[in-house]
Length: 126
Image 1: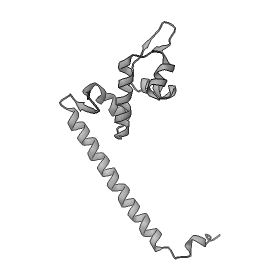
Image 2: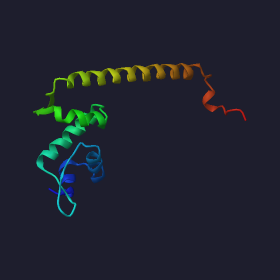
Image 3: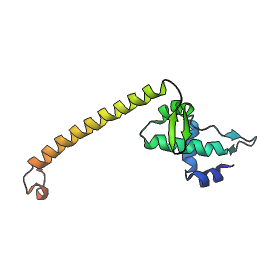
Image 4: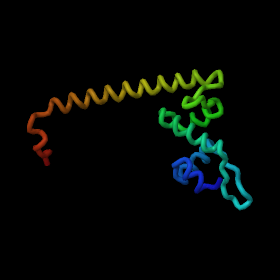
């Protein structure tokens, strides 16, 4: 199928499909004219990419993960032995980032709470 049909079937903009190709996530065939030709399996690949992006994985990791997963109904199932360890490390990185954001929010809330009640109407000096 050509680009317009791929866009219709996936709901993904042409520019994003090209980006996935640049990142090594999609490899459509090319006609002699240079036009991209996508297969039905590319539609499934885009669905997997979208799921992995929604899980918070960067495209660089998705490029490594895609060959190591299979779809089992609605679930993505790891198939490579070392994939689980990489995904666990990524989950730990996300947990640390969440904890850092929560600490930042607590500091910000402390600052906001310390403001005088009329601070919202005061103008900064100068």
